[in-house]
Length: 378
Image (cartoon, rainbow, N blue to C red; front, side, top):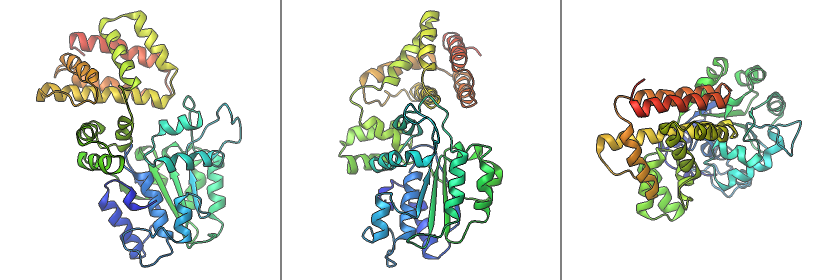
């Protein structure tokens, strides 16, 4: 993978390239981002660049040497990858990153703009609580103690490190604090605040800003042959998230989450108890990542309604059906209830993250929304 494959983030690319040129490569990085900003792809591009055998390179790896060719296939013996896993219907025990490495390699080669929900779907664990477990930590320690096979550096990429099992975290603390020579760790997180302070304090933090609308628009046009009008609409809706932009690009009709959210919200407003509990039952069958995605979608809708109310603009949506819903729903969001509605969604996300009973969480949210949307009170 090349730096040129990563959309935007030019300052970070310059910083990482400079690190290699000046021989000031940190032994442990933390790439912190919100979804879709390119941290995972950047980790692979940096790993490939560090071990590229062409010393004349200036801005990117050569792509021709034996090291680069193996990195491009994500199959280099000095590249070690770890990520959240859980048992599935096919795999019942002894689960670790090694169990699913072929699936991870496959999905990354398709697109390095990967969401946690997409990964869970890939391995069939969307309803489970996936973690980076003690077996993975033991594997990290064991592999770190071995000398590099082919290149100067061994590189460990740990994706979604906040999923590290708490009791397993101390296992890798010492190896991160005092790593063997020529060993580099690149941790990737969407929630740096969830990392143990003992680990966080030992990492060089690099924060990935959201992509600009123009960066997303140009990438859709140049890399995916998207027409300019559609690319403009998608870039506005993606909110700096290229994973979301790609999802919308491949849609041929409104996403299922739109219909689900619309119908649930209508039942909340009308206080149709039978329909509310029917929707709550369906939501409770989803995995927690999808439940959080549903709530985050609601937050985006609320924000878009606020923009409509203050700017009096027609909403930018790919499908007329979505735009029509936004215009109608925006009439029920205003300065009296917008903060309370937003707070209720955020509280629900926190409860889901803490493994609260999802039926209770969504039932409670449904009845609170009825009061807020219909009467505008807290």
